[in-house]
Image (cartoon, rainbow, N blue to C red; front, side, top):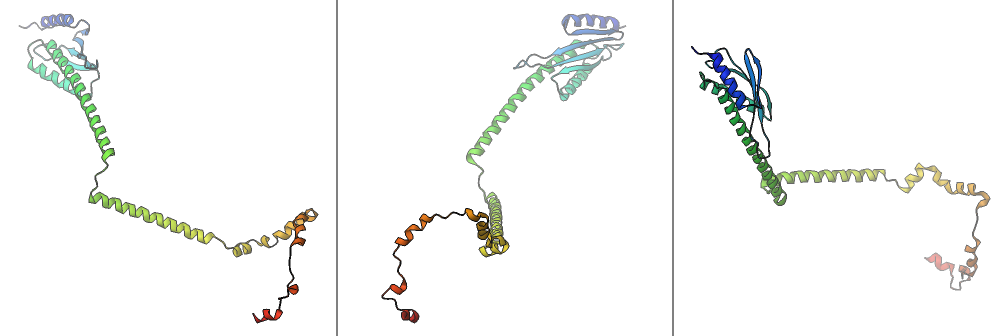
Length: 240
């Protein structure tokens, strides 16, 4: 007859010596404990980590232990689901044997794979960004290849824009022509224009000054009266 308590006790002692810094007993009945598993450091010293909680069933190891992930670091939901599936698979394969070390080792290996995947994923993202930057640079240098289709699309858009510009210009010119008033229209609209000079003189009053020097040279001008001209003949003017 199998002594389950003895097998469980022996395994606990072994686990405590294997994982002295990450093994913690939570309770004795039922036997419950946690083991924290950390991956090896990646290229940039990044790590992933998870804490596994195990509970012995009464007939363990002939019954699989209960297990769950109680905490994790740097793992996404898909990684967590993969670890749970891995624990299920390993537990079924090792039924009848003490298996906690085997389960933890499988999770340890899985975490190392995840770190490698993170490295690969980052390298792929970097390469993708480089390809996109290179393609963008090519587009700026070479431009978009001209095809009949994109040329016709551009031509239709260009003609439409040009037509709109002409319409706006014609409308502005038409509006400007309507708003432009002749001198007569301005005079008719503003009746103050016909009295502005008179009003100016009235407001000036006796303060209007005349510069007489402007007229001093008038006497020196040789102005001939038409009647003093010996060649003046009024008859000839009438004949014209």
